[in-house]
Image: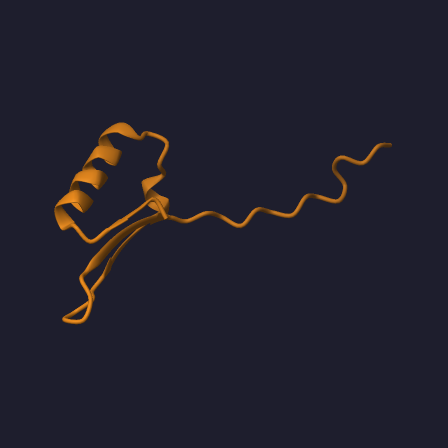
Amino acid sequence: MLFETQDEVAWRAHIRDLRATDRQIDWTAVRIDTLCGRLIQPTTYRLSIFVPTPKPPDPGQGSAA
């Protein structure tokens, strides 16, 4: 998770700033969630990045011949 808040204005500003300044974020791997709390809890805004599962090492690589 990169950012979480219950303030919608701060949420939108943070995303706008990231898009303008952070060129390392792969926006195709970003997940944007709005968790609606209804009347019981306030709405929460969350920005996350998917992290791929690392591939296991190839058994044939790295062995001394």
